[in-house]
Length: 232
Image 1 (spheres, one colour):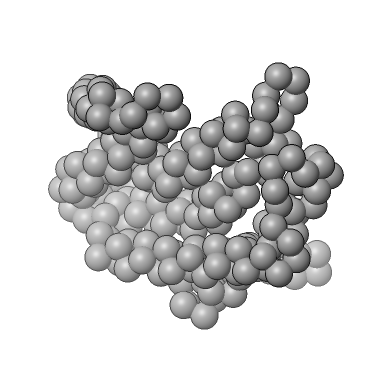
Image 2 (image 1 turned 60 degrees about the horizontal axis):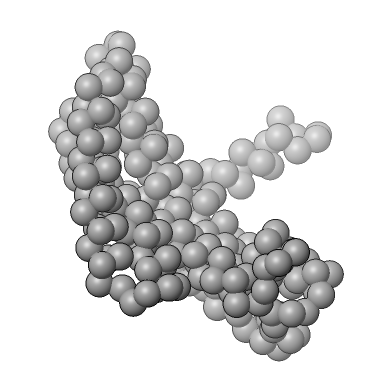
């Protein structure tokens, strides 16, 4: 499409890809945030790791979960420049990204208290950097293509965030009713919590996305339906 000169059409395709990817990774981010403690216990709660260290790993996981959306969208945007065989702009953006990250990391680290707060300051700087670089990169690429359906994308992003909050609320409520996971519980208990809370999050998120009439969600459901056996 880019080679044919149909830039606005290519921009629409790129924006649609970004919205679809965001739709898919949003519930994963919610799951990472809500289930950070049992996941950390299953993956890292062995050997010399004590409960405090596992909890700290869970906090870091939660911070990274907040940056999953901009991290993903940024790498989708990079494909927009690669379609033009333009590697210079991504290089300059990488310089800007790393500069911002270093400045924020030094600032946050120096202002944080010793120990765990300083550890948390580094991923916080990292995810804030990606939010900033997306805000910088999006309009630059939109001008290159003529449009990236910015208004529609922001509207879809807002709906996805609402659906994510509903999924999060559903997971937290059900976990509190069944019995929240506590650090020190068995690994089997952690896996069970991750399983049923994860299912609840995805179900609540899917229902919310359907009720909010997110177009990309409807398109995804239609694609899955047509790939089922017996359907054309």
